[in-house]
Amino acid sequence: MRRSLPPLVGLLLLATACTAAPEPDPKRTEDRWRPAPGLGWQWQLSGRLDPTVDVPVYDIDGFDHPASTVADLHRRGRKVICYLSTGAWEDFRPDADRFPKALLGKGNGWEGERWLDIRRTDLLGPLMAKRLDMCRDKGFDAVEPDNMDGYKNRTGFPLTAADQLRYNRLIAGMAHERGLAVGLKNDLDQIPKLLPDFDFAVNEQCAEYDECGRLAPFVAAGKAVFHVEYELTTEQFCPQARKLGLSSLRKRHELDAWRKAC
Image (cartoon, rainbow, N blue to C red; front, side, top):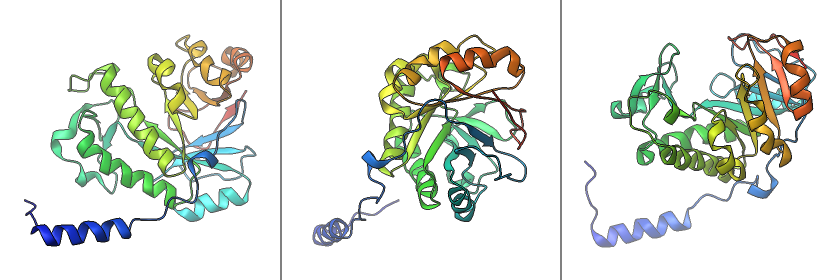
C-alpha cells in the first residue's frame, strides 16, 4: 500500500514534479501525419519483414520491430504505423504480467488473447500510455489500436457503446498527445461519433460483409481508409473499393508479406 507523505515533503515533491515536467513532444499535435485517401500501403504483422514493397505506408507490429526498422523504412520514403492491441490482452507481450487479472475477460478468438475491461481506464490508461510511448520513441508516425469494438462482442464484461466511445477517445487523445496519428479499427457503428477523433481508418472485410459504404465519411473528410479482404478476390472487391476511394489489399489471414493490391 502506498503510504502518505508528511505535508511539507509532499509539497516539495509536488513543486519538483512541476518544475521537472518533460518538454512537450517535438511532434506537435497540429503537425502530425494525416494520411489522405488512396495511399498505397503494406500491412505485415508476421514473418520476416519485407521492406521493399514500393508503397508510401507500412503498418507493422510495434513490439516486434526496433527503432532501426522504423528508421530504415523512413529512409525508403515510407510512413510507418505502429500496430498495437489496445482492447485485448496478449499473453505473449513483454508487458503481459503488468495487467491485473481483474481486467481480463473472455478469449477473443485468437490464441493467448482475452478481451480487456475497457471501463477500467484508471488501470488501462497508464498501461496503454507506456505502449504509446514505445511507438513514439521508436519513431513511428501513427498507431493502429486493435480490438476497439469489444462492446459488440462477448467479452465477459457488460460493456456499452458509451464505454467504447469513452475508451476509443482516450486512446486517440493519448496518441495525439504524443504526436502520433491514430486510426479507427473496424467499429463501423461508431464512425459518425468518432470521425473527428481519428485521422484514418483500418478495416477488415467490409466488402465481404457489404459494409464498405459505411466508411465513406472518412474519405469525404479527406482521411485514408486502409482496407483488406481475405476471402474475396480482387476482382470481387476492387471495383467498389476504387469507387469509394479506399486503399485496398487482399491479404492472407496471417498477414505475412504477401499482398495483392487493387
